[in-house]
Structures are given as structure tokens and as C-alpha cells.
Length: 312
Image (tube, rainbow, N blue to C red; front, side, top):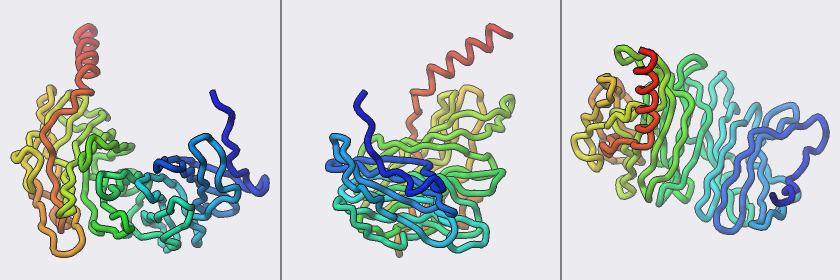
């Protein structure tokens, strides 16, 4: 175990540092955290690959009015920092993002608003996706949170102001994670309540996200693969704009979830997904699944089935 990294300390015992995250851009690490000093702000500091502190005085990413918290960070040349922001009041958070250059310069002092609106938005996670950044967050209410996605270009432009709905809030998809599988392809995993006959339990599910950078389209499928190793049977194999997939899990349950598109900038086509409840937000980025199962869940599914058979 190496020696501790001498990260900046709070200026006084009245301050606390919370919710740290870190990313590496090939030259520096950027550590971000929430700083509490009567209110919550977003601070950051660069660290060298050898663990030496580059910024003895923290970089202030956001110190706007009211609360900014739950930061996260991704990197590709510049860093992209995301957070939940209460600056506009009304009891609803925005998701904001700001780029930080390799030399520590804050390129977006006010932060770019990724998504606003009258709902709770929390736990944004940025990821470099091969040509830009994909941001995943939870959105809904205190009782029911869904998952949504948007893209941010390397120059900080928000490409999808109307987000893609990954899964509906009614099923309470909370919590979630995203990881790059290959350029322009990622895996999203999340827990949600499964109301399939015979289940009525919370399970882990996964979906494969495909991105078409030329059109700024996001494809996240219309079904999901749960612990039963269900396959999203998309009609186009995951590369097109339409999708008729459902979850063909071993429990025989069908995930007929809504699916729709995030909209990119202007003039992009709409993926109608399954053509169900998401249509009001279908205004741009396509949405479908690659149709590939998440085989990593299968061993656990088999183990669960064996346990059930022994107790039957």
C-alpha cells in the first residue's frame, strides 16, 4: 500500500468533504468532492500519477447559490464533472456539467445544464463513450426513480436536451451503473422491481447501449436482461432505429417496457422505440438494444434456481 495522497484539507472544522470521485486523463487524476461550509459546493484537485498533489488549493467547480452535490467525473483530454444542482430552487434539481482542462482551468464556470424540469434528478455518472461523453442519471421522485441518458460533446455542447429514458420510474430503477464495453457501446446495469408473474421482487437488470456518433443517436433497447439471463430480442440487431425487444427470461416474464429516443441537437430523426408511453419524449436519439444477453448474470441465475429446487 502506498503512502496517503495529501489531498487538500478543509479550511476549518466547520467544513466537511463528502462524496469523492476520481478520473484519470492520461496525465493527471482529477479528484472531485462535495465541500460543505454551511452549504454544499463542488471542489476538485489534480493529483499526479505518482500520488503528488498538484493543486494545493482546491479548484472550485461550482459554488452557485443553494446546494450542489453528488459530483462525478470522467476524462478524455479534458475532464467532465457532473453534479446535482439546486441553484434555481423550486425543490427540483438540475443535472449540470463542466469541463476542466488538463492544466486545471475551469472551461464552463457556470456549468452546462444537461437537464432541468420539474422532477428530482440525482446521481449523474459521466462516461467517455468514444467520441463524446454519455451521462446517466436517476430521475423521478423520492419514491420512484427512473433512468435517463444524455450526450455531451467534447466541446461541452449538450447534444440531447430531451433525454433518453432507459427505464421508467414506475418500476423504481435505483441504483445504476454504466461502463464502456467498446467505443460507442456500453453496458448499463441497474436494480428495479420486477412485476413479472411469480416474481414481484427487486432484481438486477442490464442493457447494452449503442451510440451512433454521426447522428448522435443513443440505443438502449426496449427490454432488459435480468438475473434470469433474459435476452432483449431487438428486431434490428441493435444497430437501427426501431426495436421490438422483450425480455425472454427463464421466468417467462415479458419486459414490455417503453422505449424511446433522446433527441440530439436539431433535425435528427426520431426512434419510436416500442411506440408506447415514451413517445412524448421521443424527439431525436434512437433507442434499441443490441439483442445480446448479459451472460455474466447467468451463473448467478443458475445458482438461484438450484437453491429454489432444494428448498421446494
